[in-house]
Image (cartoon, rainbow, N blue to C red):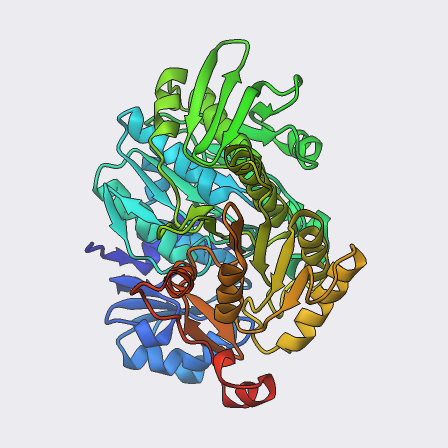
Length: 539
């Protein structure tokens, strides 16, 4: 899209303390935060990151055509005669700069924000499907997909929420294509880094807030406070010309409920399994094909059929129903149709079927709570197959825990695996520059603390492909094999290098080997042919 905006107009419009009424009158054609992608006419925004400093690349951005610079440091020698605006917090300002550049797109949209530790993508997609069923021109920006005006974008996101200027670009593209409603996943990182401050949310939805990202936030309370910014922001959203509800959708069953209920200053609706929740689930039935239940409220009682599995997806459906019916004015009947239309989500309890006589599943579960939920869903599937086959199946789980991330969850996840799975195979999940052997040792200790016996009920297999292959070879008729932690993602990080990896391809490769049929090859990882000490020196 072609947009030309004045630097002066942008800085006159953004809020204090970033506002500058004396900004130069330079014409801008775009915004860049990476000098390598800067284009002629761009405003280059130099930010201090965790591993690099954008101020070092100002000259490079100018050489590529940047016509103005925003930064935090004294860089007069690098900038020369170009307009330079120095701010105290560039990262916080970027979202407002981008919103002003793209002419405040959120003010022309009904914006539904979804946050939480687990279930954001599923809940967001359920709401999106409900909006489509209600014949709204809707868009979505989530971990696995971005859809604008019916067109899917190959975003390649490795994080849930894009950078601030990209978020505003996508919203502007939606406005240009007459989209009226957008569902936007938001993470604690996005709120802490101010990526979505200018999105002017109308509805906020939380799935749950459990143990995750404590390495970055320092404590659960800080992590919860970062996510709570979504609900604090609702009261600041200005009135819009289109539908502009104010609603906080809260999980009554989650420990975050009381805290979020106190800080949310707008209308609230709760959902959950208990009688105290305003939107509730009753008569829940599980099967390998999905879930069925009755959604109830003082205003309605309606049967729900969902193609997703697991009790946690009942909760995600309730969140979507509460947001859609009480925030967006969708009828319960249409909302139920929208839920039924969602066939599945890539990498979320996704079944891989190549004719084998056991279940093979890929899931994104990479937190203790998500792993617990995924394994409980696997046990429900076992209960059904046991009835059908009149024999007891086993739950075989493959998972790891990431390097340079919250170390406390390594032991927790291994404990959960030992308690809920019959067999656990501990393996690599983005070890980065940490010792993979060290990570697996921590996990093994967790499994042993819950009665796990190495090489009997759990194994350590560093190479993820070999771990999946071992699980598939181990499986018997009626078993459930579930590979957790990577889901839809397309790479695994060893050292500082990303290696192409698709978990679904890996499972298909292992299944084709097991079945003796033609299939794809197992994706390459450096752990296939090098001892750890060797590959760490190579990458």
